[in-house]
Amino acid sequence: MKITSIKSHVLRYELDKELGYSQQYYKHRTAHLVEVETDEGITGWGECFGPGNIALANKYIVEKVIQPLIKGDDPLKKEYIWHKVYNLLRDSGQKGMPIQALSGIDIALWDILAKKSNLPLYQLLGGKTNDKIPVYGYGMMLQKKTVDELCDLFKNEANQIKEKNFKAMKMKIGMGPKEDLKLVSSVRDTIGSEFKLMVDANHAYNKNDALYVGKGLDEMNIYWFEEPVAPEDYDSYKELKQKLKTNIAGGEAEFTKYGWNQLIKNNCIDIAQPEVCGLGGITEYLKVSALAQSNFIPIVNHVWGSAISVAVNLHLLTTLPDMPGGLFPTKSMLEFDTTEKNIFITDLAEEKFSILDQVKNKNGFASPLENIGIGINPNKDFIKKYEYNG
Image (tube, rainbow, N blue to C red; front, side, top):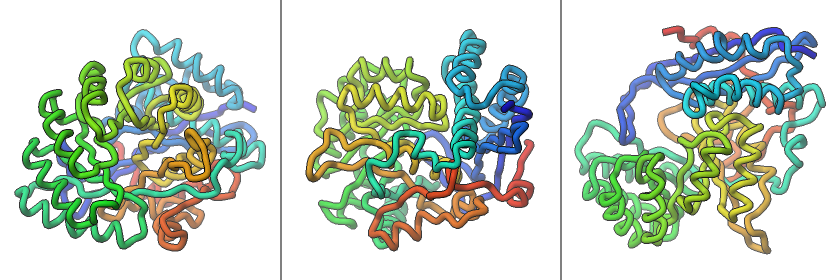
């Protein structure tokens, strides 16, 4: 079997309202799909992490930088291909966009292997350790409103997430330390003291401000404080982890086993959040997962993007063993976008695939599809309609 072509599809559409997080507001939703074709007629699909115009840069890397390196190679030689690309790009791309681009290709190669084997992806990853995965909803994005107005919006959205049967929820912060604690307090009061609530700062703070916010979160029974400081700031991560009761979560902006080794070795996080579409794909995710498990760090994957990303993460999570195990272990969770309807999740696949329906009907849980490969294939007409070339 040989790789005959690698195509990159950047999809985009305009949102009804502007949404944001601590770093920016945005009006368009994007997704970046990768299509790998073979001489046996088997096509694999993957996805690259990276919003907005970053996706356009990654498209160029996929098609113009990586494709010439591996076209004609056997797609089943995933380890060989991964290290061939990494070694040839090492001087220019140990982190960031080259690794995001490689991630989408690698995921597509696993899809090809699973289709060639006539098995669902999870079977190639070791088989199920759990039949169903608890799902948490992330929403409550920032908007260009006052803190009091956002408090009202977040209260309503928190109630909606809870009513849809999600097992937990995550909100954005980043307006300033005092404003953020007011936002979190309003949500906590709305959903009750025991419902699992997580807070995501998207590296908005310096260490001192993060400590101030974190001490406030400690008093509100927050499950984790995500990306409190810049991902490069290992020393501050370590100090926050030592001084706060709230779990420190991070890793979505870390790349490859090499970067993750530093994050873990420096004792930075209580909860690992690997992003399979960004850190190097499934091949590298398995190594990062092993690193986290060997250091007894729970894994809750970061999930952002289309139905491809969601489907892949369901396969990965269903194969994760309970850490540390027991009669009543804490389960890893699937992150799911509950903001304004994301048609790249709801309408992309040819197959029936609805996390919202599963959450509703399975009391907050979801399971991977039993179809071969990752379980879904994008609708080509849908891709044509939303494809964006800048």
